Length: 397
Image 1 (cartoon, helix red, strand yellow):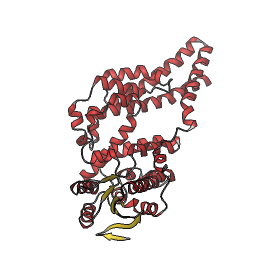
Image 2 (spheres, one colour):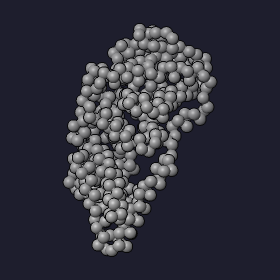
Image 3 (cartoon, helix red, strand yellow):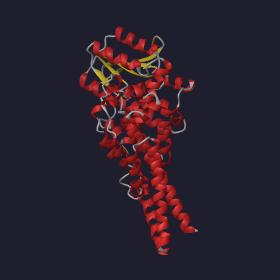
Image 4 (cartoon, one colour):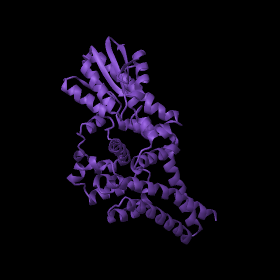
């Protein structure tokens, strides 16, 4: 182990290429200086950074949301994942405002320095969306809601970060810090957030070295990845298929796939039993189901400050969508909100600046559509189980 200033570094040889790993703190001006010093003092042929393409685009300010089809995102049910990624961006921007240091600033320095020196830039990290999907698919079903709500709450609710969180960022990154509380208790989270990304980045480096044969390579990564990445690079090259395997999204578990249909079967059976007792009793069960589903979904839309027509649509649609696992109430309310309040160019132009303040999520039409989706989905999910429990209670009485 050697050192550039206080920055941990490690130099090793990979398939004939001298590779220098530079560990950085993601909230440190010193790390930015360390990257500048390393590039100025080393005759490198390429620079690799702990970024994926979407994070790189956001870092250099090229994430053009005006080309995003929000209606398609909502209709496909991906609005929740997009909201989670935006929440991470909000968390990162709020960090910069609080600390006076741009989180990931050392990555920006590496990107700019590589461009100035006309050096190839390697984006070696796994795409953030894939990491989040693998995370939610790999943890037990009962932890998923906790994870996603915890992510949104952490990114949107806190006005000031604790010292412990800031210290954690000096060894990891925004994504790892956000899930720090969970990863301390979950080997699964550690594997996906840290170990898998170490493997992925090492595999990417092996592939690029084989194809481009640089003489010297500088790799800029968070200090928390330094040991794991070095260990992988000093081992035998991974199979050619490993990176593709680490990009695959695990299928939903059997229980998760059948649970919505099981709930629907129970509720429809409850209706059938209710009408078997008499039309009046069955009608009362149906009415309670409609009121509970429609009301909680509408409340979710109201909390997101949806258009009145969106709220009414959510009330009408929720009792039906809750009986059809292929269509969610949030997909309906999000689509209607998109049609009623189409985002303006100013919403896209100000999106980056408004992310840091949670209250601005309700002012910007882009983020408000995502909130309508998330809150309506949550309301409908709660209503389904509350309504189902109420049906069972009525039948048992």
